[in-house]
Every structure is written in structure tokens, then in C-alpha cells.
Length: 136
Image 1 (spheres, helix red, strand yellow):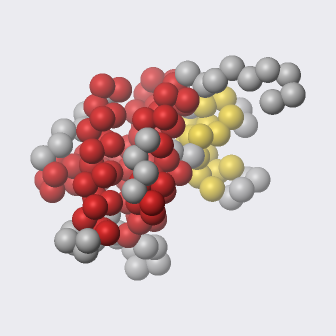
Image 2: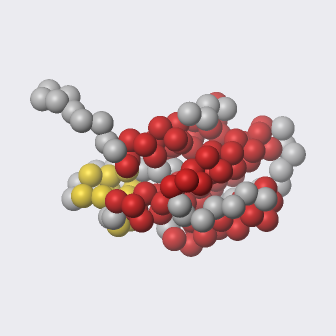
Image 3: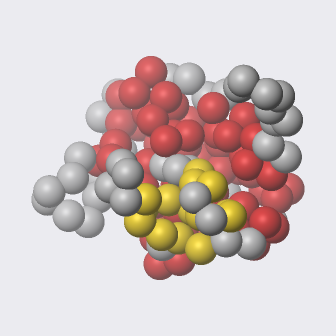
């Protein structure tokens, strides 16, 4: 996943002139990158920047690359490892045993529906998970 995250850094710098340095303060740049890339996909003005495999769509590739970057920022702050969640057969960031986060999912709303609040909200919930009471 680190290689995918590094790809996000390269794309952000080269195509959008946005610095990504794995610091929490730069999450707004990640949001801006996602919004710009999504806009380019919708109006077909951007080439396939994220896609490296003919088996995946550009949206899936963008969510994977940007999700890897977001996950690496979270991993550096909270610890954890990338691992396969056997229940749903997806790679996620496992911060505590059986406590998975799936950062790529934070980007699907942005790329599919133009919703952009999900990325910052995902980050905030991963860093400071909401307290759940009995029965939640």
C-alpha cells in the first residue's frame, strides 16, 4: 500500500501542483486532489492518471491510490498494519486486532456522486473514533 500512497504523492505534485507530505495538516490537499480528479473524470478532461491495470476502472484505481495515501497518514499517527479482512475479503488498515478501516471507501462518494465531505469525516473518525455505548 505504501507504493500506492507514493503514487498519490507523485500524481498530486506532477498533475495538480499539490504537495502531499504524509502530515495530518495536508488532508485538505488530499480532499482538493480528489475533487479535482473527480471533476476531470466527470467531464473527461483528464487522462487516466490512477489506472495501471486494465482489470480495474479509473474510479476504483483512484480510490485505491488515494485511500492508500489516507491510510498511510492514519497508520503513521495510530499505528497498525495493512491486512486482509477475511470476512469481507478486502485489504484494510487494521489498527487493533479485528478493528479495520477501509480508507478507499472514503473516496467512492467523491468520485461517484461528487460528495466531498466523506474524506475529512473518515479521517477524523479514524483518528478519534466516536465513543459507542452499550447496544450500538
